[in-house]
Image (spheres, rainbow, N blue to C red):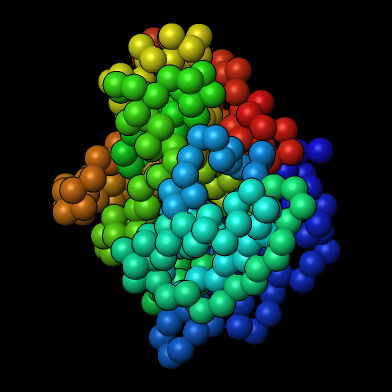
Length: 331
């Protein structure tokens, strides 16, 4: 069973409506009524040694940063501001108190960068691997959370930054390559950027209709927007930005660069949509103020069965990978 099939099974029949709940299961964060004029954004992630990380590839402080970063990225994808976080860890003997201290120093470091306050958690021993569970709480103005379900036919699709670098970084580590350009990609995988500030700037004008962070892979994550919005999409794969060094390093590893770019995942960039009528204004007036590379890559389609990426010659990309699945790895 694949991850999202399991999620559907576990949440089938669950009441998704409540007086104080604006959005529940099915988005990057739950959206809950907060103080006057505000809403809380709540998200949680579980990281398991051997599934999400390998301690041979990262130090514990950097792992701590990433463990919280992936939650802060969910808040960014909703257009929110991080406020609080909680963390529970199950610590094996090989990590010990010193390792746990380094892990939390990493978490606190990224939390301080984004103004988030630790408010609780739990600890346990583990007779197997290290387990990290993080919950983050953010906030936004009431009614301003950006959901996956807002995309409409004709909306332009955009993505920030460069994709594929994190997946390449993981492959490089697995193959013992860490010098030169490889170090840059390894850093992207182990300590991803979190686009909180940029997401707020991009969403301030109200032009963005849906948004998600690229964690499972661009095609998979656009699929989540399409599923929630009852739509399809087409992107121009050749427009998606990637580091110029990526193709050569991918070739050394016998990896398809387009697979890494479209399905690699864990880049934590933002993929989002803007109404066609506002796209040119958005590109001219909003994007320059972020200082971030933002690329228009495609269009939302009416036919929800269409989920395709095209090359410059008009042919459709055939991918060997289909994004990250926690129960099947990269397929």
